[in-house]
Length: 453
Image (tube, rainbow, N blue to C red):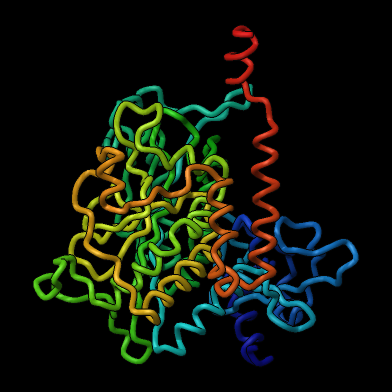
């Protein structure tokens, strides 16, 4: 908790920048921001938890109508002045209940895992690759690629497709760099109307805060262009989906040294990872099926996690719980040069705090138990026969949300990683989501069966 003098200084600095209002934004089970707006002169009250919320009105916070309110506690070290609404200051927030951290808040859960890592001398760095579609919404509500010329079968890195959306892209890039995130690359991605932003990694909480804010910012800037930005995992069956690849490493809390990095020539596997890094990966693979429920948390997510589906070529999305070198057919990939690894099953619908908490907990277990992930898979796993897959002992990732939630529920590690309350609420909510989907009669069913029978 900051002192009254520190809060006054922050308030005065914000006022000098033209800020009139403050939004303390915590997240629901989806990772979507929620909060109340407070005039800047009431920042001190807000900083002490003045804003109360009925959790029953929100998805996945585990409250009933008769429960006491939860409060939000803004993080005054990570304030963002909205680039499109400079009168407003955004502050990521945690929830508390009766003065204690609220265990069903995913940001709180991540911080608890970071405390466990700190007790071992570790901090966690995280970089999230943001893939997003920018689309036109038709009168009937359907979505379409706004530029009719953006129609290549393989549009990845296409310069014309990029330049045709330069207005929105420029606004995004300018804002990201103005916020100090160090955007180092952005491009037209592998689907028509799809783009990716890559900015520098940071500590795990900061990266999750940034990804949460970026999703909101992308939608606001697209709206101003008359477009729709969506991070939905798979808007089109015949196009690549939206990933949110998690790039992870641990660092020494005292020195800041990357604890996963070593010269590839000194690594028997040749990937440039330390034994600590391999142990972490082994923990992620051990619990890979359970983690998939958090990395790919929607019904739509599993339309992305296919080898090819309706696409004319492979999807780039993983279907196997495996690790390898710079090989994008694995769910866990070690990029060229090593020093980190990438979880590729994470998609644009991810609650980043929840997924990061689970990944960190799994990795720490791998370190504590000295687990070994085995040898990296080097070849194109999409082309494996069932016999070859079975011979290597490679398992599939879950193939739908129900299977993922079953794995999540069956793995006792999840209780230690998230706590009983958050684990149970996630299962309850995701089972409802699956049942709602399963009971919906789709246009495909009507078209196929109404004439057949």
